Image (tube, rainbow, N blue to C red):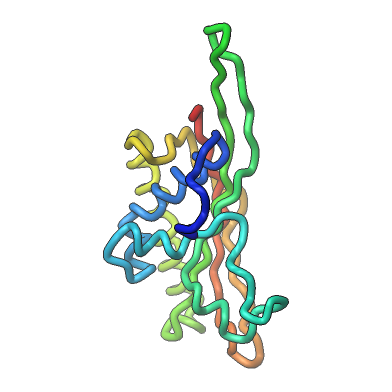
Length: 176
């Protein structure tokens, strides 16, 4: 996430910040980002959308590859519920996490191997996110769901953008 943004406050922004911290601390995410630290891996995580295209309208051929891999985080829903105390509320909600991985050239046309590698990546990230669920400053997960199978983009004729494999996950988290 952009370090120039305001500090996260409130239950929505804190959830996104905790989700980003959790993902950036995943060894698998760091590995596919070729990052040796969580801070470096965090530079591949964005809230809501990628930075705007250089020309301001549409990404130029190959421009998206400069972000690879990348993750998008978005607050999907939020429920505030009164708890036992007269002034206390709890917040539950979901965060949508999209993981986009640019298939390496060596696996570009090997569907079985690229699928196996992406399944390993997504599965490992899920396991590592769950392992951090009780760590302070990380997202306290109650569940992770992948509502649909991940998708693979079609190769374009110019080979300018490459082939992407994209997984959408829903991170459900109790109160902040």
